[in-house]
Length: 91
Image (cartoon, rainbow, N blue to C red; front, side):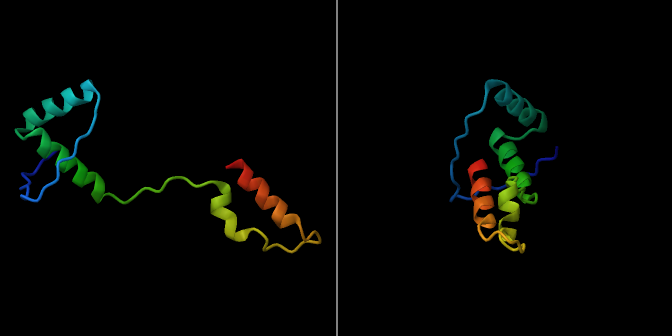
């Protein structure tokens, strides 16, 4: 992992994050190995993560197909409404 020295502006914000002791020890050890502060290491890791394409949370079958509810022709006019209520109840 490469950590570039990132200047921090005077208008920086302090963020407190709770992590387990093992992870904290790993962060401190890696920062020491790289010769940077833990803040700099975490700042760089956050920037790298935020630069990645956003991953969307998986959606339910209903959320993925709700625009299709009621578009099929059928002889039962109430079928779509009953089917949609069944899908909503599953969420």
